[in-house]
Image 1 (spheres, rainbow, N blue to C red):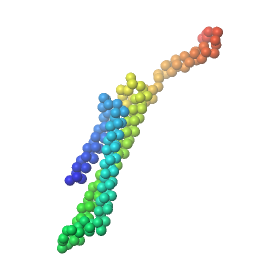
Image 2 (image 1 turned 135 degrees about the horizontal axis):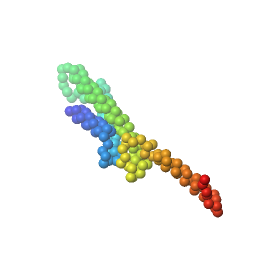
Image 3 (image 1 turned 90 degrees about the vertical axis):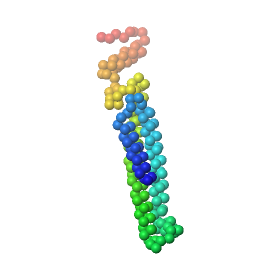
Image 4 (image 1 turned 120 degrees about the horizontal axis):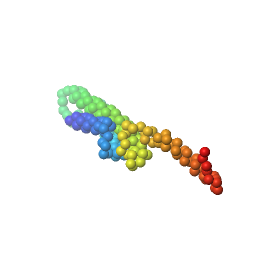
Length: 176
């Protein structure tokens, strides 16, 4: 029963991660999205640790002496069948836990990538400044940061004029 619930929870987390990856709300900034993704990543890491502990527990229970010990109080005319049944049950649980761990590893990788991308978007937004933070993420970072060619030319020319006026203290600069 708990295996089905866990699978549903993992499935829901994967769907949530996919939704967050594919559609960024216009109201949330990249920093907020990165924070949400980090929270999800923490949840996935916690679940991974829990499942790894459960896997170690199951591996210990699968040892023949532990299977025999667990059935010591059960009387039967066919104890070998009971031991085999218990072993199969533990193997099924172990397989389910391993499957969950594999799914969590995939989810963790996706979330780590999404966090890195959200951090990069947050950095780009902060570099653009608060007035340009709502620009589309489709726009390339170089097109938003680079000034138009004429503005760059004026800036260089302005610098040349300023330098020339600094070096000549008495004579005005005459352009020709």
